[in-house]
Image (cartoon, rainbow, N blue to C red; front, side, top):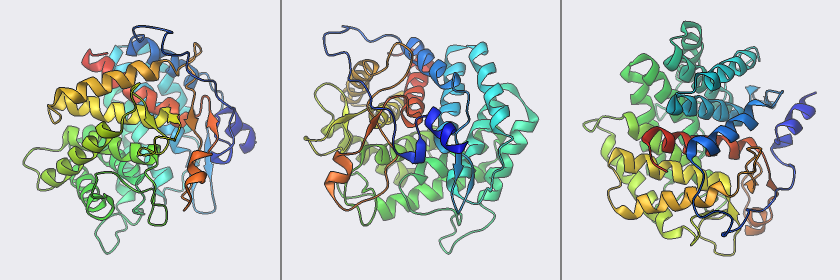
Length: 362
């Protein structure tokens, strides 16, 4: 049963997925379709899935974080485009997902709260708000010696996984303690994990700049900086880390606007989920006025132009790296399977499309 659900969502064992197609090619379209149109197709492909993807490990049980990230992205797109019918479909899917048992003891399942909190923000649904805040509060119920949640692993993914939940709790409640939690977490992660060139290794035993891993960081930075006040004591360090990362990404963008599976390896293949995450993070920084150099606006626009060619007519995103654990050899990353319709890619594309549609830029 679980295997069937995972296969339907392109996430079986966070690994084997359908082999993807390639982009239509540089001559396929002079102008990329609008973010609302491309994002709408991607949202439709996501919402057409009959199965909610479960996460079942020896340590945690809940809804898979990629399904959550996709639901969040589809809800943000609905808000950006004023599409109430789309939001209604997102709400209906979340109601089904909310019935899944959630162990609430691990970052990968606690992040579920991001989804109902977005619904609560848009609809005023008190029950969705209650469920989301309960997960955000439970995440901080037990602290480590560093005063972060005991769920903090110092894995780079956590910058979005923990950060998005706590920031969403702040957005929905306006209680500043949630924002303080997110800010403290990000600053500690920057201090410990950011490399001198601005990027982040996949892990202490994996000195490789994996695209989607860095994408979670970039997207987490963007979400937190959106709400963190200029006078907040953690703001300067977090913004400095973000600026440093964006400069490194700008220097490593491929000529066609994409980013690669391994960001700094020219021999590495061009990957869509990381590209969408980086494009989203850059577009948000430009909108917020943090990235004033016109090169950043050109970079995210080039990324969108390129990325749109990897979205099939049915809304499935191609060339998505499947789930990837850490490894100490480059072949592990270069040889990872490439999937079509994997929710890691659908989610990231939706974030980017929502950011562009909401700000009136393409």
